[in-house]
Image (cartoon, rainbow, N blue to C red; front, side, top):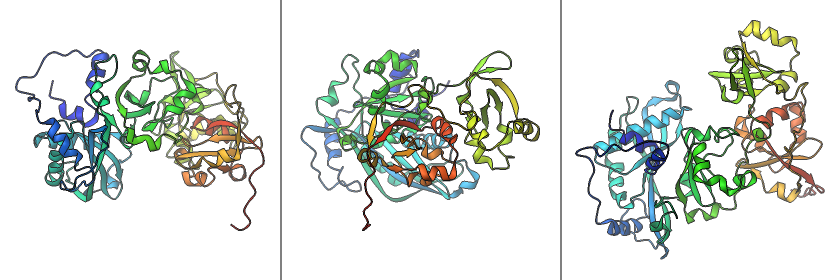
Amino acid sequence: GSDATAGFEAVHPISYIDVSVSMGAVSQGSLAGCGSAASNTQTTQATQTTQTTQAPTSTAAPATTPPDLVPVNATLWYDLRFPNLVASSQDLTSVQTETSLSVAIAHTMHQQGLSNVRCLVTSLTPGSIQARVGLFMTDVGQLENARQFGRNHFTKVSWLNDSPTVQGTPTLDVGYATSTASTAGTAGTGTSFPVYTINQVRDHNSNVNCWMAIHGKVYSFMGAGGAHPAGNFLSLGLCGVEASATFDLHHPLSYLGISALKKIGGAQVGTLSSASAEDAGRVYPRPSPVQVLPNIQVTLSGGSTDFLQKHNLGRDCWMALHGDVYDATSMLGQHDGGRANVEALCGLDATASFDCIHGMGEIQEAIQDYGISKVGTTNVVLGQGCTFQLQAGMLPDRQIAWAELAMHSTTQDCWIILGSQGIVWDVTAYLPKHTGGASSVGMHCGGDATGAFDKNHKVGYLTTIAQKGGFPQGVISGEPPALDSGS
């Protein structure tokens, strides 16, 4: 019952209107008094924009653009600081917080007459609250208007009873496409998609705003693909990444068809800029083995069914123990070993982790002492007796050389050896979920972490790693490289 333009553009590209229509939305007509004639100076404006890409803070320095490329979108990035807000009063982990700031900025842009520009908000940080904000436009002729807004009007934004100041100098990110690609559209669709760089794709990495690039096209998934059989894409480490390798590992190309994407709330929203070619060889996180360890179905006490992995938050925490499923939410703030150790098991079969520390009789003690309640049962039990067992199909039949292992030596692309069998795990998606911190695992990326693991954990913890994003890649082969005695 209202004009939702500002809220829509704060979160979505304009191509989402086509997605809405494909999912059942029906246009009722045009709103009287809205809209404006298309500019007839677009070509001239685009030329002027090209001349500023090499000097974001000046319009005087010309730049040389490859003759076969044209700018098709641009993002002006600003660092904002809210001097009167402190992190202690705000939940900066909430996606809704970023979205609310996007809406506030979009509302101010609308008041100042800045249209067809979308606001991107990332990297909210503690302290006197700071955020990285991008003004994204597919009409590059809007660039100078966006600059003027950034210079003069950010201080008019009101968010949580404070207004921001701009820190430092804004930067400019421009997406290019060939002159034919920028006008030809996508064959068979009649739609001309905007072009995004890989950096722009990376900024869409939340539950409400999940993009991924696959084979040169950019896709968006509503709810981070929560309808996907393997689970939410954010939890699999696949939002905001170039996911071609992961996709090819598990799917034929037909899964990128319109009908297949629609089933999981996905649609193409753009194409990947040739400026992203430098990222083409990068290896991104593989999916979690929930594809081999399927979503655990829970038979509830009333007879209906649910899935364990859906209840994976501190405010809604279920876990399975020896085939029984408990709501452990009330336990988080009372657990003797600390909240983090329990919260890390929300949405998982915690049998292995429990058995590594506790006896069976302590389940009943937890029910009495912490007020946890049984909500259902499951036929799946993982890691009983503090054990780990490879499930069928979980370990690829592949030999991995030490030289290949060494190539995956960063926290953005982390493989490690775990166990006497020499199994190589991709733990990239697991790192941020490690209760001891990502760095304590990250220091072993590209090498053998068996000794460090055995020093701090029992073998049953491999079952937990497998449920939290660890993914076996194969078995190490050959002799480890000799250490350089001079280093």
